[in-house]
Image (cartoon, rainbow, N blue to C red):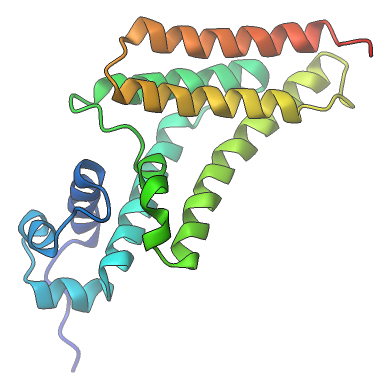
Length: 197
């Protein structure tokens, strides 16, 4: 008979996330992970399989939390504004200013498996896809459904990355809000006044 798990997987995932978010993948030790989760080393490995699988679970938890934070019924540029404003709020709400777990992992990605690197790219791709969708809605509302929104989507995504990275350096809320506001205003001007090449 298989023994039931005696822990709450959601709580353990949250504890793993906290360690990886603060320490990064490479610097997080198994001892720190066992201490944070309250599980013995053997139990932790039995539940997750490997340190990388623990990190994968933490990234999934982070991505789910982020998706919940940026969810909205707003569409078009107001929906895109909500996304960037939410990124600002999440950034300044963290007293440790740890930035983004996914972006933080990029410098050490070579130490991860190809599958884990793809998971990180997929997570970044999800944010890009959401911003692209909001811009397509905005273009359609402006009577420009045929507009190429890819440069604008790249700009808004870059703004979201800048907010996270610069927020990690301690930039104040107003500065981060200005990044968001400037990107949205630039997108609005571009859609309202198309270039005539």
